[in-house]
Image (cartoon, rainbow, N blue to C red; front, top):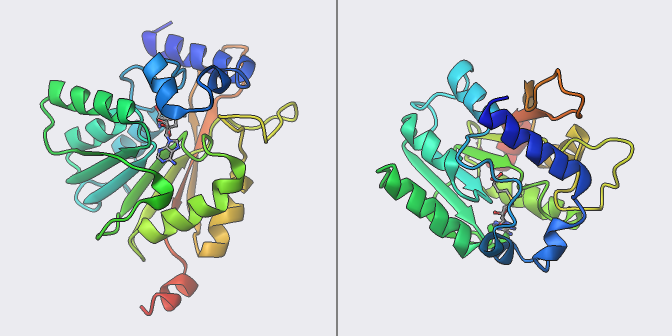
Length: 242
Ligand SMILES: C[S@@+](CC[C@H](N)C(=O)[O-])C[C@H]1O[C@@H](n2cnc3c(N)ncnc32)[C@H](O)[C@@H]1O
């Protein structure tokens, strides 16, 4: 078993067995969780395989096409650093936790990546003068309380560049019949949970890719993920006066 599969294995077991516990231990406070090191989602330097697959194998995600990228709830920032290394121009990672952002900044410095922007901010109040042509959400939608999902979709929509912008989101952990969708974080999710909030805002699913997040030969579940990408529909472009 490689260190990556070991890490994912631990994370998978965590998601199955301790979903109810970890956030309580940190008093449901993200910064406290980071300070106490209760961060079982953190893959310790490993970039999520789904993003690597998208960047390295898929033609729709090219550095020359996507110049301004946002990762909300970026945590330790591995994906921000990876995207900079892959040649994407402007990458912003934001997180509510000052501790997480400090970790991300230190990692970037260690890797001599100087121009990635890490900001301490609440995504739901995040204001910026320019829009982003690529927003990556991995384990952020699943981390926020379900009543905030509509706000999440509105915020994503307002931050994405109309017409050409893309949202990629990792759907994980996938809900099973045994799961209570209101117990989290992470709150177990289904593809439909995203569509429910994104479709009314003019999002279209343009690609759904099943990616292996965990070796299939193991008996543990189902850690497959999906990526949704979106181009605003004609009706939303009309609303934007285009
Ligand atoms: C489950 S963790 C995932 C972190 C990272 N994406 C990863 O997978 O390693 C969720 C992250 O979202 C951050 N977060 C929670 N609420 C937030 C908010 N309202 N605005 C910005 N970040 C938030 C937390 O501090 C935490 O780092």
